[in-house]
Length: 365
Image 1: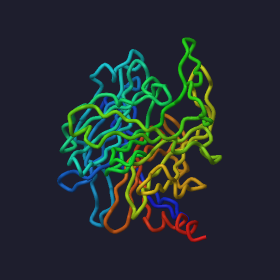
Image 2: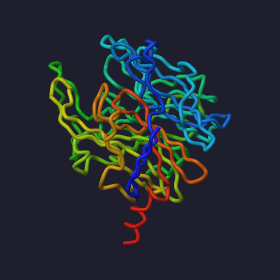
Image 3: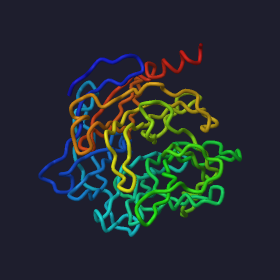
C-alpha cells in the first residue's frame, strides 16, 4: 500500500486492494469495478467484476480486511454470487456477462438492490437483483423504461446505473425510487454504424447521465419497476470528459445534498468499430439538491482522480480510474473503491470536509 499527498478536494491513493488470481480462470483476465456495501454483520464487502477468458464476466463477493488502524489492506474471497445464466445476460460474442455492479441498501425496504450491466445479444442493458444478505441474490430482470417523447429507452445500450438509497420526490412530487443511468442514444444500423435516436429537442449527442424515477412500491410488490419522468442530468462539460460521462459511486447523503463521484472520458471512437483510442478515464464530483436531485449544486471543474499511478496506466484498458464503490466511515473519512486499467481494484481516501471544501467555497462566493 502507498499514499500520495494531494491538494484539497483531491483523493489520496491507499493502493491496490485486489488483483486477479491468475490460477483462477474465473478472474485471470482481471478483477475490477466493484460495488461496496456494509453487510448485515457490519463488515465491508466488495462485489467485483471477475473477468475470465474472452471477456466473460461474473460478479464475485469478497470481504475487505482492515488493519488495526481500520485501513483496508486486502480482501478475503468468498466466491461468485452472480454469473451469466439468463438470456438477457448471454451473447454469442463473449458467452455473456454480468458486469460493473453497484449496490444500494434501501432501508425503507430493508433490501440490498444491485444494478448491473447485463451483456446480452442486443448489447449492454441494465438489470436488477435483490438480496437480504449480499450472498444470495434474486434477479428482477432488465430495467423497464417508460417511453421518452415516444422513444423506447430500452432499445439502446445502457450502463452505469445506480439507485439513491432513500426515496426522493419525483417531478410529480411523489416519493420515488430514483435511478441514475447512462443510455447511449444511438441506434446501431446493420453495417455497425450508430445513428442518432429520434429525440426532438435533445442537443447533447454524447453519452451522458440521466435521471429516471419509478414508484416506490414497485420493488416491494414483486414486480419490475418501470422508470419514467426522464431527465438529462449531466453531459460532458469539461475538457477531461468531452467524450462521455457516466455514474460512478451510488449517491451519498451529505446534509441537504447528494454526493456522487462520476467518471469522464477523453479520446475518440472509431465509428462502426466502437473502438476507443487514446482514452483517459478520470473521476469528478457532483453535488445534487437533496429534495430535487435534478438540480446540480456543484460540479468539479477539474478531475479529482486521474490515471497517474502505474497500475492505472497499464492494464487491459490503459489509463483508467473508474470509481464504483464508496464506504462512508463514521470518522468523516470516505474510502473509494475503483477499477484500475480494467485489471485491478484500488482504494483511495478523502476527508469528507476536504472533498466538499471547493463546493462550500463556491457557495460562499
